[in-house]
Amino acid sequence: MQDKVVVVIGATGGIGAALTRQLATSGASLVLAGRNSDRLETLASQLSIARATKILKVSVDITDRQQVEHLMKKTVAQFGQIDILVNTAGAGVLKQYNKIEPAELDAMLDLNLKGSFYTCQAAAEVMKERKSGHICNVVGILGKHAMAMGAAYCASKFGVVGFSKCMAEELKRFGIKFTLFYFGGVDTPFWDNISLKVDRAKMLKSETAASAIAFALSCPPEAVPMEINIQPESHLFF
Image (tube, rainbow, N blue to C red):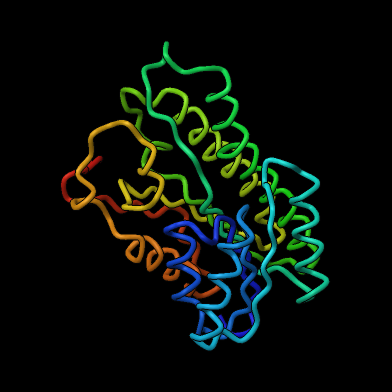
């Protein structure tokens, strides 16, 4: 990871923050991207204490394509390149299909699907110039397996899988690889506003998910970890 430039979308969330902490002493330059500037400032201060050498924090709403393009331009202006993009941002509403409001559907499609697409699209254009790059999309298990109450959420996440696989085919000749992460329930703030009754004590830890991402990033250039599926023991899918 020495001298790599890593852009983490959703850096102040559970998985994103855990990942930045794990990468803080790896020699990588970290770009912390998120909507809340105060939380970005707090995270950056924590990482600086952990001796992270180079940090850029950018407040961005990834549902706005122009803001995403500004994020990538600012990263290149600061560090000259983008080696890795990690998409950890996401939001969810779990309801019966006939109780999903139009605004809720729009919010999930805008953030989970369009936001991920915009960031991958913009980062890939930078990576193509150097014919090298790694894009990691944290999809979640509901991007692979359907679940009752998850119609709208699954729609957004299945869409991420679809465009990621298409982009991987188009970009492999430029040396850009994709990894999709199908984590089961991860105990993050995502669940704070979910009405379903869940036992968060049995979920995966953010650090576990972050370690899986860090592993994928540490693989040698010729190795492509295309999909990583990690589930809590109480939540297995095959």
